[in-house]
Amino acid sequence: MSFIVAIDGPTSSGKSTIANIIAKELGFVYIQTGAMYRCVTLELLNNKVSLSNSEQIRKILERINIYFVKGQKRQRVIMNGKDVTELIRTKNVTDYCSDVASLSEVRHKLLQEQRRMSSYSNVVVEGRDTGTTVFPNADVKFFLTANPIVRAKRKQQELAQLGENLELINVLKSMYKWDEDAIKRKDGALKRAKDSIFIDSSEMSVEELKGKMMGFIKEKYKEKEEKYI
Ligand code: DC
Image (tube, rainbow, N blue to C red; front, side, top):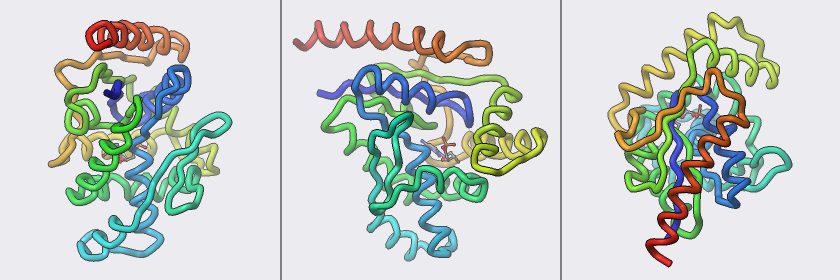
């Protein structure tokens, strides 16, 4: 029986950074669901597939193979045998991804993949709908957020590292659109699960955040261990 930690929240709320750290510390597999949506987006862009072409999208989804491997600092994302960790982070992919992630067929396929990945291992899974739609019975659920300026600055830095320098105001505008798209999405909308632990990380260091989250996780893990072992 797997132990599942689900972490959801809006863009640049610090989910991936902390999920990566926690998964490493616990020796759990880290499922970065946003990266999976980004992979599908990159593949559609590379193949110039229009979002109205369901037949082509179906074919791409049939043959796409995404997995994660341990990296020195962060885990690497492999799609169809190629390391796409940096390629999936560009502004082009980020902008298009929101529309791709709204397609039901894409969500359905990736949801199946995410459940399959958790069937053989304890996992930390991170995204928008992991504690609501993908793993409604997750053992611990977190909903992370931070104030919009903090989030926009984080996103601006991430893009700058990829050589894309944007004004903060433009990052903020894009962020509002991504948030709105995620909240209004028909399937897998960004929504706080009722039984999730809400954390605003605006004023917290990564160490503080880690300490707080690990406290909840260890408590739940112990409870489950005592119940089943
Ligand atoms: O977390 P991220 O920024 O890497 O996510 C990339 C895109 O995928 C973003 O548009 C939101 C979408 N996404 C989603 O719809 N559902 C998820 N579980 C994770 C990400």
